[in-house]
Length: 366
Image (cartoon, rainbow, N blue to C red; front, side):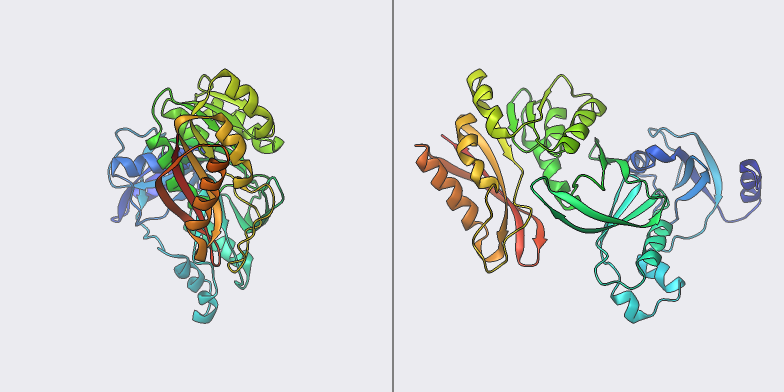
């Protein structure tokens, strides 16, 4: 049936609802904007409208969000949960209990920890039905190596792993088969954009694709962003341009230890972000950490930080040692450098693995 035919058919029904037609590549941006406007209708499903667009249900015509057209759409109620979709596919209660309980929609990709779920392909198809704006479902199997490279598997959809994810107005281009992106760090990324001051001189020692660099630069900070993984660095540069912060971000593809001497000679940092933590987190009963964890770079960080500057140190810490271990490490490094530390805040970002937490310590160093 043609697009016009579909519109005529829907206009002849009594159960009419509005939908805003938007281009598929910008559907996530549009959904976020519609939510901000208060007109996104989450009781109905997002559906494909044409080959390159989707119809996003709305309660009223948008006033601020860009769209192609507002159309009449049959008001089919959304199957609200993954359980609903799996039950419709004939899954038993026991099978549903083993299905994933959480996932993240990142642009056009759904990222899910599949665990011990039966029939992963059916889970993937159900997630595509639940999230009409998505085109690929990836099962995430872990992260490994010094560059924190993800292991993923396409379980549904067209298999395209490149996407642009929008979060609090910041746009992140990435290839989820090649670079890590943690949905659980969303609040921490937003926090960094909120606490930084305009024109602060910031050093992001492990920038990745711009996780913290971008929100800080968008807030007006001058950020030197260092990343040694060539793939992540490529997306970092792309994201700097994508967010129009190229005049405030100075990217380096290098080991941060090699950048610090020149950076410090030019001027010391008001703020340093150490967002890297060991890819293979220690067991909950093991206080040891492998070499090159974040705390191994504290000497370089302190060399680059101005007196009175703020340091944000991330770590994967066994629950029994939260927040004692990272604070002790930070204080020991400061003492060795002849500097004093004031702990400003501690944040438990997310559960990293069973019995291990991803934490961050904020400290002022005199």
